Length: 358
Image (cartoon, rainbow, N blue to C red; front, side, top):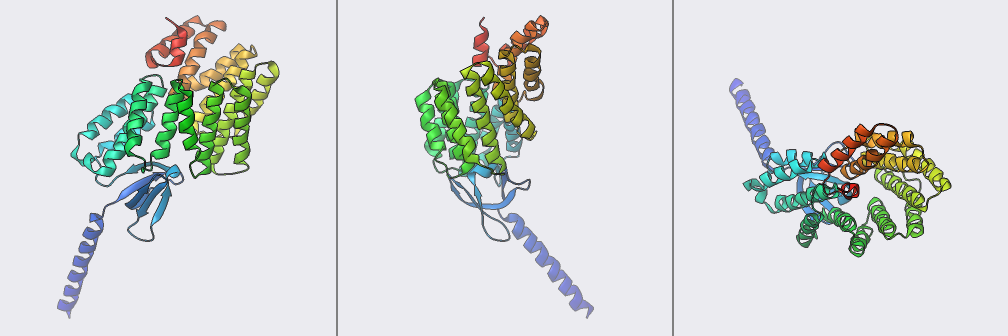
């Protein structure tokens, strides 16, 4: 009897080991999502420009839309790729690009999915660096165009299109930017459509079509309706910022006061996690206050960006430019000089640095 029990236990243990080994041998990819703090784990079995299909170890396949994807941790990827992506998300683009270059030399990066995704990540970091004023826009354009030539079926497609549009706009190529943003606005998700439409409004503003841009931003705000979806609300807030910029461009005390009221709503409602919207809201608040002659209050608004949102590099550069003037106006020329020096050293390619002159 004891022998039979011992044999049964041994067989059971062996079976558990066998099952455990079999399970761990299965490929496990991890999809990091905006909508969840828990990654979606399993084998990615299909990839399209609109999303991924993940087959979990247990249960039905999971469809993850591309607009919900932050990053993918691929089965078998080099461990240092996690560190590289972290530097990228922290806007430490120089460190990220060096890390990506190191990852590219690892033989584990030669699988098709990792290789293509790494190409996008390098293009993304290159664009981030260029848009921050610390790199060349032409380099970013070349990287993004090269990715799009081979990544038309990648879940990164729309993200790359949006980035290329931003690079084209920053380069002054309005027609090319409009073409990219029109494609972005054709995406199948409301938040991405709104992002594309808001970007098209930025092109109108760059062309000095202020009234048309104002109407376009208002259309985006209206389209959001009463949606409680975080990504949709984020695009709505971005459109309010664009509307405020239009009001500032229209000039006049009434326009500035109206913009301030709109901005106060954004600063009250936006969660702390949305640092990009908050940073731009404080910038536009600073613009209004400066133009109304309220210099000390304007300094305080710009300081919010300098002290709290320095990771938002393009916006940080803009805040330093204004602080480089306003600190002198409120009796602190040494702080003005420091702001100008930081702008020159940290963002040598920024248009705000070029405005300083020699």
